[in-house]
Length: 375
Image 1 (tube, one colour):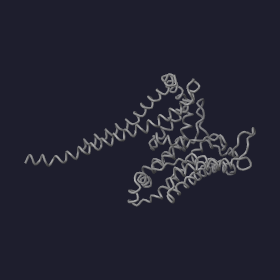
Image 2 (cartoon, helix red, strand yellow):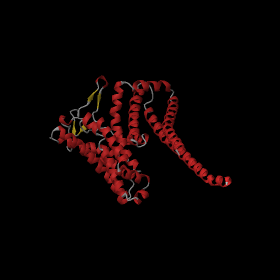
Image 3 (cartoon, one colour):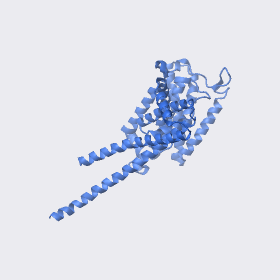
Image 4 (cartoon, helix red, strand yellow):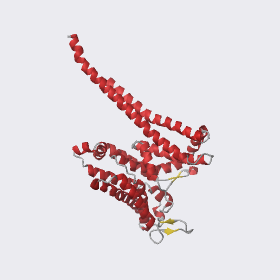
């Protein structure tokens, strides 16, 4: 029995290492072919990416980007663990940031109280916007994909309408930028000065807290167990006494609440207002990062750092004469390679497990026959 356990553990370790290695090798191979097809030298491109990407100022840039990307990845992963595809993270975080900026701009309370109010306002807005899709799914059977896509469009329309001058928006001195009323300076969160490398957003600490909470709740609580059970089999969860509809609605609300945090580093650490240049599309980036990280908190963190690294280095490659579309190609190739590699390894592992079980059953069936022959 100990030998069998040892063999299984070694095989699990091998499969766990094989999947990411296979994905990396495949991604490098395909990316090399793509760069060669453009008539450029892939070796020089990879060397330039490594040199520029690990410079001190690039590391700060990557960490700042990874902070928002990580929050987006966790928000999407919560839905994935429930077998839900919350494609509405993009609309949820933008609407949450807009409402939080509008509320924060009129607050007259001290900063130590204003900042928590702004963050809670953002989480509440994201949760309420996601709850619409959750309620529609459990009460009317509406696909969360369709509902969240429509809610993204509605959120964009609401923001566009309310951000107009004369409503909640105002023009800057140049008359080109429309924004909410800026936050009072007391609501600015201090940044971490790293010297010549630049300024690091202090809300990176918030991303770490969210990651730890995600790991603990999903992996160490009854609620997390029920959530994962519903995601794997709704009928089995219902048979064990879990309210499937309640879990679906709850997971969408939690996913939306985390999505509401995505815009906080930009709002509280950087821009201090919501304007028509506020970053968009981070919710869709979160989908790719959740897939890269396999919904694991550590994996999502690595995926967020990789995404920030690629964004930093491939933008630099454009100034070296490489095609600007290379970033999208590399990102797409990496996501596809990771998904395919993990699926290939998963199927191989399942086949090996079936073979082991078959061998054990055959060995047990042969024992009585051998004893009869000896008798």
